[in-house]
Image 1 (cartoon, rainbow, N blue to C red):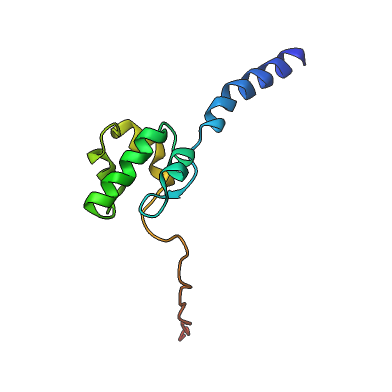
Image 2 (image 1 turned 90 degrees about the vertical axis):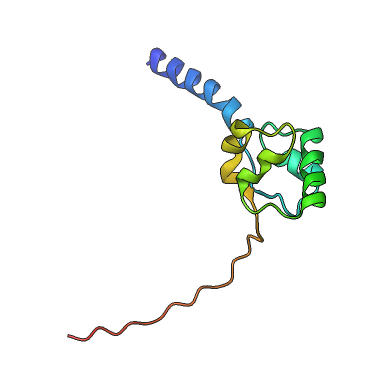
Length: 104
């Protein structure tokens, strides 16, 4: 029983740093530098300001991989944050479902 508790405690301790640094979804085409820095793992204030500056100079990012054009942002940073990098407004329009009548 003590070994089980110790193993669980160790597993929890190892998982906490990963959870604490998890990226938060952010629209990199609309967010300010402070929001980007808070949201993306491994992106601090300087890199976030570089993202905004690149966006202002070149227009919106079309895909997450376009971040590689920003000085200090590499493939590893993009991959680590890929699921959190949003490019468009996240409010989706309602989808229309067609009712299909089955003919037997």
